[in-house]
Image 1 (tube, one colour):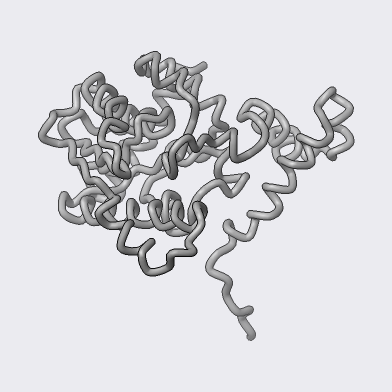
Image 2 (cartoon, rainbow, N blue to C red):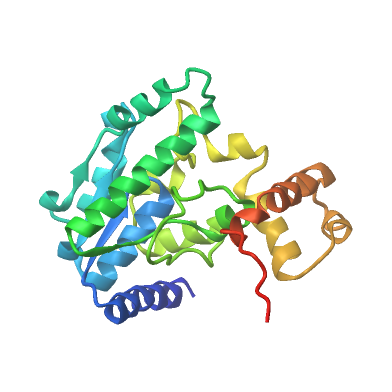
Length: 253
């Protein structure tokens, strides 16, 4: 099953690039499972020489070690890898408003990364391969005009737990498969810590509610904690507006 999925997504990336008339890909690689998987699919579709990882740490350059290991595992030439410390760009933005909280600061980081990503794509006549999975999309766990920005999204139809399965079939390094998911927005930040529930819980609940159109009560009857179910659904509903932007005026005949 995973081999078929892997092959179909590699073919998807290959055809998408051919239709758009591009041969090179830029991928923002954090060392996490999503970006590593997207990079692996891009390599499978375009060849390692045509994939350009962009490593965008904030301050701590040691945080890119896992991304470098993945790039090396995938056979991507060292000369293709570009690293930029975004703290040099984010700090002046934060300095404009000393009251800026962690969320706003994290959003600024995500948008700065998007600017650099698309600039590198322009420089290399490339398309940006995104790293967003279905769980993040449904929960609205992304920054508008930030980490959601891409030209091709190979993982958007896969829940986070499915991405892990795909990553294993792509033979990604074990440390990528076992590390705690994080957006790398501040020290000690983890996705699940922000959520208040696990990806496994979210994926199963979202699958029942979104894919199978089941009610909250029906999901709870399967043994799920009501508080967790309601928390997942609330987060999804609170962020649903992100899927319908920009808001346009109604057309009139």
